[in-house]
Amino acid sequence: MDIDRPHVRQLTEPSEKDLQRVLFILHETISNDTVVKVYTGGSTAALSTYLRLLLDGCVDSGGLFVAWTSPDSREFDAVALWSPPSKDWLPWEEEEFLSQLRQEKKDWITHHAISKYEELYKSAFGAWGYNAGINNWQLKAIAVLQECRGRGLGKALMEVVHRKATASNHKVVVDCHSQIAVRFFHKLGFQHQSVKNFFSLTEPGFAMWCMVWEPGRKE
Image 1 (cartoon, rainbow, N blue to C red):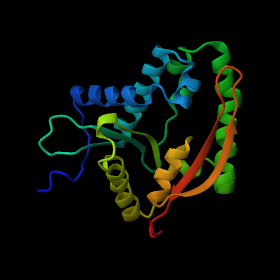
Image 2: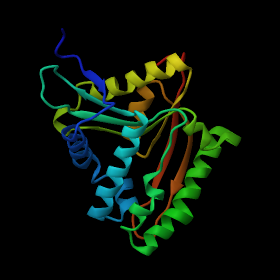
Image 3: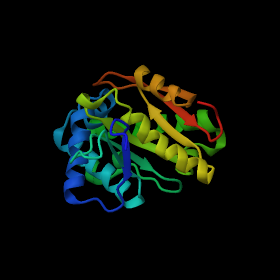
Image 4: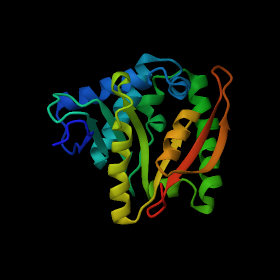
């Protein structure tokens, strides 16, 4: 067995230890992310609630995948959280999450962010709008520990879902907000569908790209 090749596993019944490892990786990799900070207002409590709700939804829908570089490793080093076709949840619309935020942040999410997402998906998919994401594989989060990057873990996590999408003739949809992420997904065969600018009075604004991978399209 080639121990240098990334190994991926779908966790359908993760243990408590598995769940804690996923949350650790997410905290280590995305807690300082620009968009995460905008959505959480820099609140540690809101961040923890958001990540737990995100993970709970992925576990319930069968969308939790993990990867590691060696089959002998005791712990995985990367995670991907997916919303499979016909499954969806938005943690930032949950009252449990919103209750952790200041009122101005709640207002920003409900009056600006949600409408911007609707514009993003209508621009990308026309009348289908956000339903195009719900009806296909949609990436919620992907995270690789800093010391394990450059070993193909992220690519391996994406390719597993590419194969599942091909088998069922579904697309794969991702939203990303950095040029680095756009280049990463483009190398994997994703095509840019739409981009919208999100604005905030209290934090830096950001651009959000919607990208799509389709079965049969050459990477």
